[in-house]
Length: 438
Image (cartoon, rainbow, N blue to C red; front, side):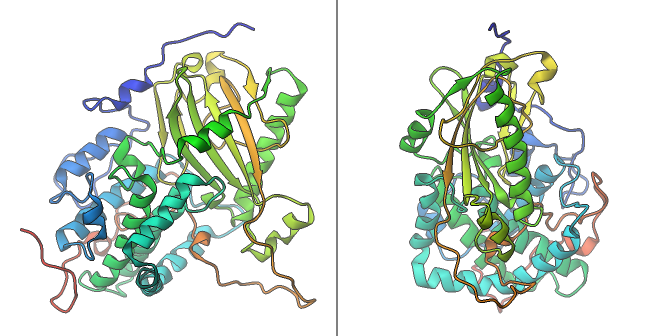
């Protein structure tokens, strides 16, 4: 079969002077009233970092991460950057946070506000037990594992959900004031910074800071996945079976996580020596923490499928690829099929799984899959019915979040926030946040 080749320009996006492509026309204002609106993507990241008063949203050293507290200026810089970052995430998905089955916006905002109140104590206790280096070591475990929920969407949610949207909701309701809970804000954001820095180990904490790259897996892991490829052509029965399973497993991962994106996790893009691009995706199809997953147990569904998807950048004319901070990949062009390209697909022999919530169809792609069983057995239950509620770990926190610069509205819309929701942290002398370096 002959594959039509186009010019792939995506590597230009990694040049320091390149501003990336615009994936949508909306722009962001936030706290920067009177200044030029901020676009999405690489250029938006550059602008937000230039506007920061400190270096906290640039590369930071291990010593800075181990430091006990942020300054007030650093907290405000993180607040402003996270606000843009989450706007950048959500405007790419017009239906994020909207479900026809589950009242996601309602339960999410209540959960986020509760998290802002409760998580600081829990995260402080964890840090006291493990130590700051121990928290970083927790993040580092993701470098050596697949099928782990120590991934960017869960770690990002520590700050984006608890501090960001939780604080936003409480400010909008006037339940708290801008000067309140500064020490608690420090606890949340310090824990997030340490986990993410330990995982990335390149000085950044967010994918958007590194031109939307999340290259955290060690080479040994990647080599094992790449060594398990099996080729098949688009017209073969195995190709059709893979496509159907792909759709079913993605849907199951969403439903098992209460219709949220926490059941999916991408890392990459990893550039391969032959010019192709690798994305590694985890699909969590049976989370033992949820009592309703017993239906997945009944069907012997594994805890997680991991798919290694290799994209033929030349075949699709890849211009940009992003792995954003809720573990979702986007490409330009969106759909290689629209350009009439096709090429073989590869899948590991002894298992099946799913890849595409990514904006790609099975074109110019090779795939390897592994199935992972639950890290611990589901506890035995008596005949007493399972409760309708459950006290869950932060893994449950929904991934589609907004923070303190705008609040949810109808699908695909962006509205002006209540003014209380965009104010900066100012602090009181009663807090333990160290003074500004200015």
